[in-house]
Structures are given as structure tokens and as C-alpha cells.
Image 1 (tube, one colour):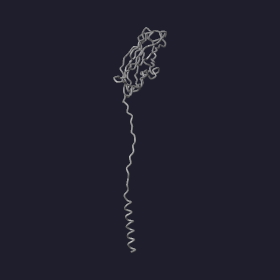
Image 2: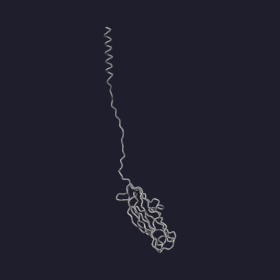
Image 3: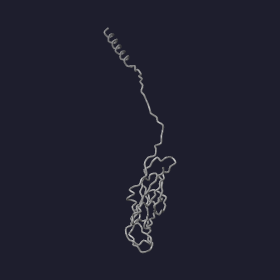
Image 4: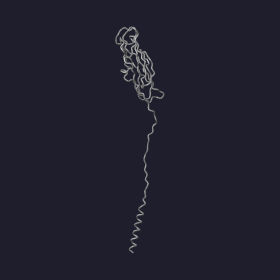
Length: 196
């Protein structure tokens, strides 16, 4: 009889283990917010500018010393290619339909009281500007500088070309009638006009 009790006890223990194995899992739910701000698309407006780079120094013209002979003379630049107009073009997002054109003009603004002025003494300053490789493409004029504004060259915005430059290639015609030696000079006014 003792053996029956032991067998019953084992069966109860075994049945208890089987009841614990299955587990009940409950589903959970929650909420969160999502948001976005949507604005009407716009194209960035024009920015930047085009300007001279140290025109006082870079456009200074020095002619080689010349000796009067009683004949018509031409003086060339002391060091060829030195006198230049340099520009910086940082413009971006130009207005639709605009090419970003610009002009550079020059005039002689030497006071009439200057005794040794070019114009007062019949000296004729001519410019024959030319492109500098890699520094922009320009359309050139060949003005004789006077008291009225003269077009020297024109250009337009070029993607990736921020530093623009042209050589002025000046010559000075000295009339045969000039018979007084000395230092002659002119004060030049340069005007850069970008497209509006």
C-alpha cells in the first residue's frame, strides 16, 4: 500500500508542471504625433556684385620716356601689358532674361588748369584692350580718350569666372608741334556699369 501513495504523488507533481508552461500575453497600444511644415517653393533672388579691383593701381599707365624729334611720335607702355582693368564678379541667381552684362568706360577728367595735361597739349591717348587668358571674354572697342565717356570694353556674367581682367594696351601720340620737354599727365575716370 505504501507503493500506491508514491505513484499518486508523482502524478500530481507532473500535472502541475504542465499547467505552468503556457503563458498569456496581452497586446498594448499607444499613440504619437507626426508633423511637417510645408512652405511654397521660391527661387533664391539675385545676390553678389561686380566691382573694380584696385583700379587706381592696376589701371595706372606708365609710358616709356620719349625724346622729341620735331616729328609725330608714338609712346608705348613702359612695360607692355602692365596697365589692366581687373574686376570681381560674385553675382549669382541673376534675374530671368538677364545676361548680367556690363560695360567699362573711360574719360579724361584732368582739370583744365593743369598746364601739362595730355589734352591741353594735343597728346592723344588710345586704348586697345584685350582679353587675358582664363579671365573672361569681352568685346573690345579702341577708343581715343577725351572729355566724354568712351566705351573701352563690355562683357557679361560667366559661370565660374569670378576674377575678370583685360589689358589696356595704351599708346600715346605726341604731335610734331609739341616742342617743350617735361612731364605730361592725365587723370582718367573709369566707370563700370552693370546691367540693371
